[in-house]
Image (cartoon, rainbow, N blue to C red; front, side):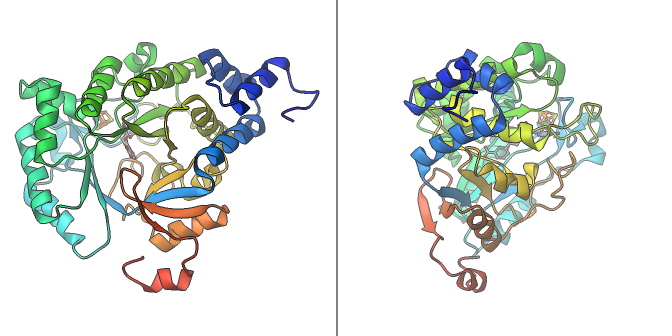
Length: 383
Ligand code: V47
Ligand code: SF4
């Protein structure tokens, strides 16, 4: 009960703030995590989601390119990478192979390619700038969302470029926006235990700030549900909220549920569905300056992604077309993640929400709420 007698005073005070449209503090967020029930945090998050977006739930039509899983880093939670010394057991796509993936979508109504992979010492800034140019030459309107701050940090340092020089160079070559990966948990207490050797919090935030200052938009993630405590999550979101106050360049926050198969943290149990939904709800409430909260269905599974639409989430990413391995290798239920538009629309409609196809930057492409399902299934431009 939100206004009932049984509600502790501190939760009532937080609910009042949220309902009045005020920003909650870090302490409030901790109280929500520690003392608020899922129903309590969830109903407040749902109210905010409906204030911001009504029933609108976004998805897009996208595919991934994962250039390599060879990586100079060794994050303990990663089930995907192969150290350079063992590169024979990994994959390295050539320019031609990556352009063949893009060509496979000729005539198909995808709007975004998401490029992310391991940090390969031989795939450098010049190589990826050339990839950007070649993709844009072939399909200029395809939005390229590419490279985590981890990949960019390594690429720029190796090329002896400042962040601004490197970012401008890739942007001019065709890179449109940045995905949110590599953020993990910013707090050094945890970062040192799960991914000690890659870019730190300030480095990650600097890269996104520079992109924003150049007019590029980006996303932000947080890898949760492993060895971190609630206050590490709040600390992570605080750093993001502060940068967003400055630049307004983030589009969406994506909590990523830790998956424990075949990695060096396999002894750590995965979070429960209740914990997952609570994470989305608190994120929606705390990150009042982030327009969107995304549930990435290949990692979360489609049923939990559907459920999250009642806990603050208003975006479930895209069609994917079985082009990413990061989550299947880490044990996600979706071993070959792929959804047709009709399946995404059905999933959203079943949750009594309004399915809207978007571009990467949340430009509305099509509202599917009144389109007949048979029409969607039979029209290749819609499905
Ligand atoms: O940074 C790696 C995560 C991320 C595991 O911006 C794992 O739209 C869970 O950032 N369990 C890369 N997560 C993917 C990413 C992303 C995904 C979807 C959409 C967007 C976007 C960005 O994958 C890494 C890391 O946090 N990851 N291993 C694992 N075992
Ligand atoms: Fe490399 Fe990324 Fe895996 Fe870390 S999470 S080992 S940076 S591929």
